[in-house]
Image (cartoon, rainbow, N blue to C red; front, side, top):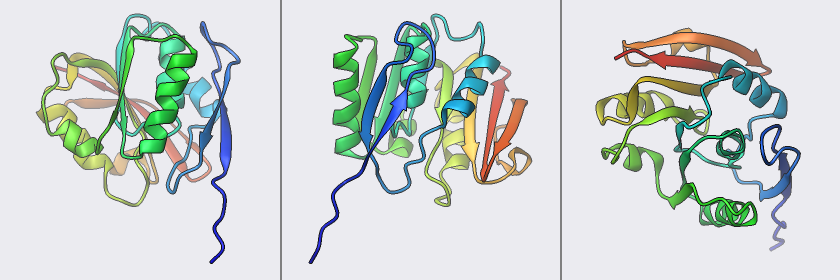
Amino acid sequence: MKTTAARTSQLRIIAGQWRSRRFSFTEQPGLRPTPDRVRETLFNWLSGRIEGARCLDPYAGSGALMLEALSRGAAYALACDTSRDVVNTLRGHLQTLECEQADIQQQDALKLLANSPERPYDLVFLDPPFHQGLLAPSCAALESHGWLTDNAWIYTESESAPATLERPANWSLHREKRAGQVWYSLWQRHA
């Protein structure tokens, strides 16, 4: 039986203290790194809201969103992924950057979100694998288990229009765009 070698791809940090740094990651099934153009738009939307923020990335994948937020001055980030390879790669990236204000856990996102955090988060990146029904339960868990500060911002990527997203009633849509088959949206929580 012929085995195929794991393919690697690259991500680039767009702005901040690690601007233009490039990192490799191993491609995984269902992994869709947020493209540079989409990340740039998202972080423009979040202008003035990153510095000092506590960020949560429960579906870390390539780590592009978490690393971008840290590069732009986020105070802390917690990320998780089920893949040991992804977790080890992200830990290596943080070591290379000498970044100590992040924690990477190997864990299922919904299991993580079923617990309550020590402190709530200001910004959450929700970019789960598509066609697995993970986005709506993730949104509900964030709200019901105290993961969010009163006026937290939640970024989502989905395969369908934001209007169809089952979300907590106290979240309002701030911005949305579409890139190919991906809808990306920024929501704000209201206490």
